[in-house]
Structures are given as structure tokens and as C-alpha cells.
Amino acid sequence: MNSLATQTALWQSVNPNFCSWLDDEVVKKALIPNLLHCLPYDSRIGVNPYMPWLESVANGKKASAIHGNNLATSSTWKKYSFTKKLSVMRSTAALASYMNHPSVRQSFISQSNCMKQEWNTWYTTYTQTSGVIVTGGINAIYTNFIRNVMSSFSPNLQAGLDLMVSFWDDAISNIDASRPTPRVAIDYGIAVTTTATSMDAVNVDLTPLQTFVQNNGLTWWNQL
Image (cartoon, rainbow, N blue to C red; front, top):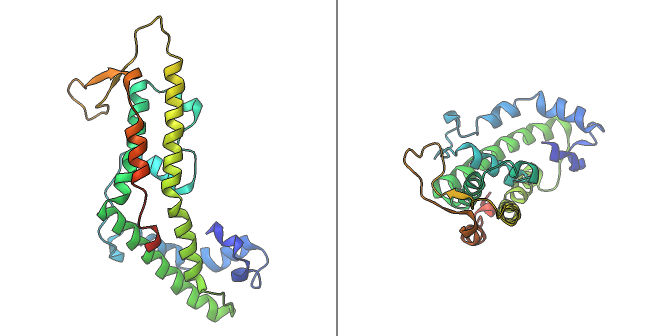
């Protein structure tokens, strides 16, 4: 909703103060509860199929990639063991597969269409009461917004993973040669109940993760 601040033709003639306009014309209307009905957990809106759950690390990286936030920071990365570092990178790379899964793709598209319809319903009433008409209507504004967001997902994911790899390389270069080479558990996670396969951290090849993300970008963002 904050992005509407740039759409001055939509609100400035009604109220020159964007925050006041947003509060009066959007927040105090029924739009927000209706938009919430479009979320995966709410079956009342009939948006199927529902999106499979992600574990917490992957879900956090997904949110960061969608919103254009940093997927990793040097200060946090330095606190991780090599096993944790690898686990986070694998969770990040796996998002390329998750986001292109048919059920996830359709869930995103269905939710987006649901929200677009709610915005269109709001806009119809808004234009009737305010007399404001913008080129393309709210439909064009929403479509441009969501496509800009989701078309950036794969580049953001790639950049985030590449940053993690650079942090990994730095950590490898700083290994104390006088101490045993750190081992990495390949099957790291709380669900692992048996001895995990392990290897020396210096022998881990991260190129396949980067290549996988590079070759599996979102192909459906323009359907939103």
C-alpha cells in the first residue's frame, strides 16, 4: 500500500496528505479484511491449491528475496558453523525449485488475482465517491506493482546466494592451518537422526547451487 504514494493521480486531488488519504480511503474501508481473505490460510475465498509450507530458514530467505532485502550479512554469517553455512545456502538455492513448483506457482497466481479483484472492487466504489479516474485504473497499478516485485525475485535470490558463497570463500581462506580441517555434515538438520554424511569444508563445491538458481528463474511472474 505504501507504494501508492507515488500514484499521486489516485489520491492527491482528494487529500494532499498521502497518509491521511490512505487512512480515510483504504484503512477505514473493508479492503484490508477482504485482502486477508486472499491469503493461503483462508479457505473462504476459494483460492486453491494452497501453498506448501516452508521451513523457517527457507521461508525467511523467500521473504527477503521478494522484498529485496539482504539474504545474508557478514556479521551473522561469521557466527555460523560450516555445516550451518552450507545448510542455509542449500535452503536458499532450493527456493528456485519451490517457487517454480506447479502448486506454488498456481497459489501465487490465484492469490494475486484475488487481491487484484479486491482492489478493483475498492476502486469502483472509490471512483464513484471521489470522481477520480486514473489511466488503466487500479488494475494497471496493481499489475505493474506485483510484476515488478516478482520479476526481481530470481535476481535477488541469485545475488543473495552469490553473497553467501563469497562469505563461504572468505571463511575457507581464514581456516587455521594448524588445526584440523572443519568437516561439513551434508544432511544437516533437526530431522536427521542418524550419522550424517560429512566431508571437508574445503572440498565443498558450491557451483552447482549457483548454477541451479541461475537456470531456474521464475517464468510465471508475467502471469500475475
